[in-house]
Length: 328
Image (tube, rainbow, N blue to C red; front, side, top):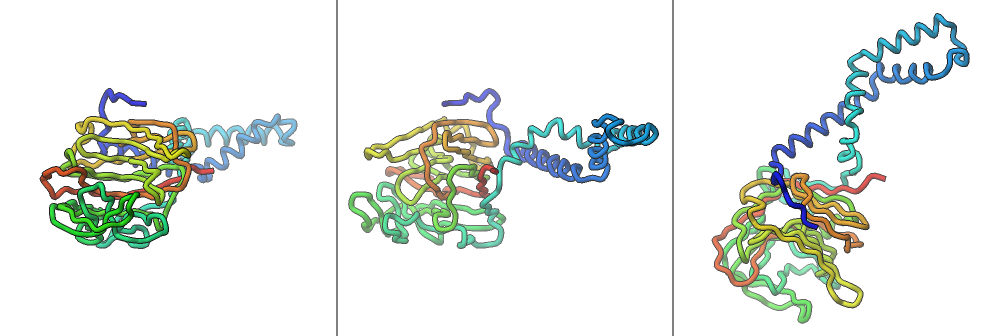
């Protein structure tokens, strides 16, 4: 299902400001719920709802209680609470999610308790630093990854390198490549089934034959979910293996002009047992039936396909990543 944009994607700064304002209102709403004025107002409101004769109060006591209630209704705490309560439906974007995983890439090194710097183990669990044989780069676990200024950078470079490739039919074989790149994933520390995963990212020099990707995987080649894959086009997609060995896929592509290089975006996917939905800066761009019903890890990588002559280096920057589940 394609969503045609009438006004484009909201700028990241405006989207973040709107989210921050909503979170601030929600925090104030929670504080107001516990103020003495509101608690007393709610107590009196329950009592006034009961007929005086059933309350056991005298007319004088009843009048004093109603007078106190009227005064509390005009207090700043109570007025602010009911003003926020009218828009409390907007708080569902906060209250329906529980944060389970987060990394803001503080410090000067990658947190190895959260991330591994090689593709997830294949089959028997072999932790070989390999690269898919059909790609024209070689993953490394050092020179193509950098953490600084509260962000992770994956650097794709033009340099000759030799290493290990993996092909589903022949297994691991030696390969030589013209480019090097990096990959990080949470396969050994964190997986999730259903919920929401989002990240603030920025990329440079996407073009034909070069891609930057935020994706989800499950320890095999499939299922594979591209939360965002950007190169010559912008792609949102999900691939899964069928019981008969075939492949089920949903792919949506947009022109690369949808997103600008060297510009930050907040990319997210939300999925339930029934459906997957892709968003950028809160704008829904693609939705498809869910075909992934197993826990998946979070991954980021850049790479080269085909044999292009690329103007590298190119960079994928990740400022933060968060994962949530639906609150019970």
